[in-house]
Image (cartoon, rainbow, N blue to C red; front, top):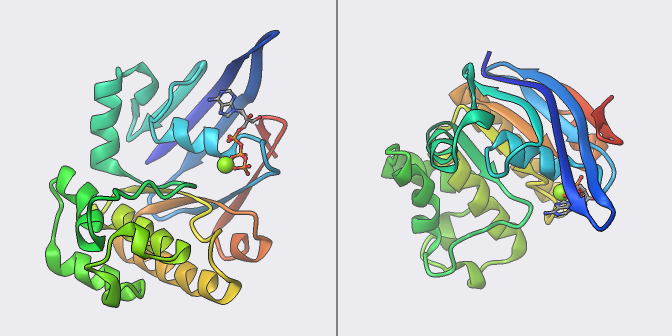
Length: 218
Ligand SMILES: Nc1ncnc2c1ncn2[C@@H]1O[C@H](COP(=O)(O)OP(=O)(O)OP(=O)(O)O)[C@@H](O)[C@H]1O
Ligand SMILES: [Mg+2]
């Protein structure tokens, strides 16, 4: 199994003690699975993706990536696993302002030792970025930045892609098209995709749907 999450809990420190956000999450994801993660604002969707991606540490529980519990690793170990196996599209795109589109797309792939200029160029074309390769993030619209973030995550050929509302800034027609591209690219590489979305229509295009309510999956 690519990903197994077991009894995962996360609390944040509040003024009156710990505030539970995730109260015991169990889920399994195999290679090639596509999952929609839904739930109201503040329900913990981003928190769950951050824990799965090893960007934050859990209060308790396990996150097994290829059988290895990343919760037991130190920050450096988690970063290493993430670089090699996981592609993340954040809710805020986190593009590097001083790099142009081509270099932003290449960034993660280079770190993972997976950079292939031809493949990265094809990816940019598929996502409609071909005319913008020499631009810097501040010269791009929100939707174009979002597509660069998607290309960057896919370019490193990760086994698992975590996407936090990757089409949230796009109009419905563009969102639908970008979504189709993303699903096609994911299925071509055999990667698994976990995507947060508020759109029932986009969620319907994923293989499975998980809903977060009061810190548990329903
Ligand atoms: N670093 C933090 N410190 C304290 N509380 C936090 C922190 N990060 C998130 N929270 C709280 O945890 C809860 C879940 O936040 P999270 O960002 O995971 O929600 P979400 O489901 O992604 O919401 P949205 O749909 O608005 O993006 C919220 O109540 C939030 O206030
Ligand atoms: Mg969120």
